[in-house]
Length: 158
Image (cartoon, rainbow, N blue to C red; front, side, top):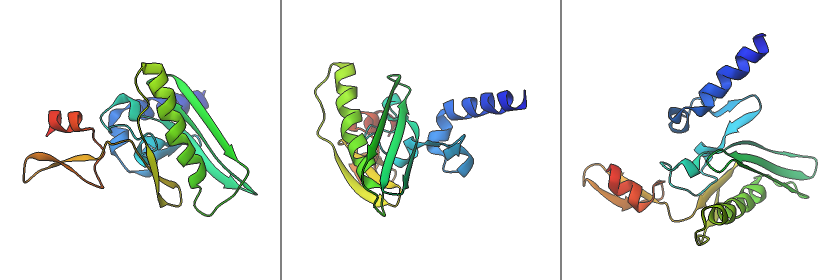
């Protein structure tokens, strides 16, 4: 059916790595699902498969919520709050901490120290120390507010 073909096309589009790096609306949103990777909700290095997430967030009549799926660990997390704010940061803030605790448990590693900073109406950025960027002129990795790489990923690609 036509609906099945559209669903398969959407699945193929969401699976491509280039979608994470793109900011075109058709790459961010489809079938009521956002490419949350672009929003930085995981706190993981942007080159890591653990940074990939899809889901939806929203606010209505006294509630803020977010639902996210993390394909690298085949896990989903849903968070709902009993408050409605103008910025919807509480669910994303909580997701930052919950996802990284879950990821550490799944991988058998120490839980990272993460924090969340509000940046926009749709939330903000989860920071777990992956704040490096390749400085093209200096040809070396530098810490940057706009960085999204781990030091290791930055060194490998810079």
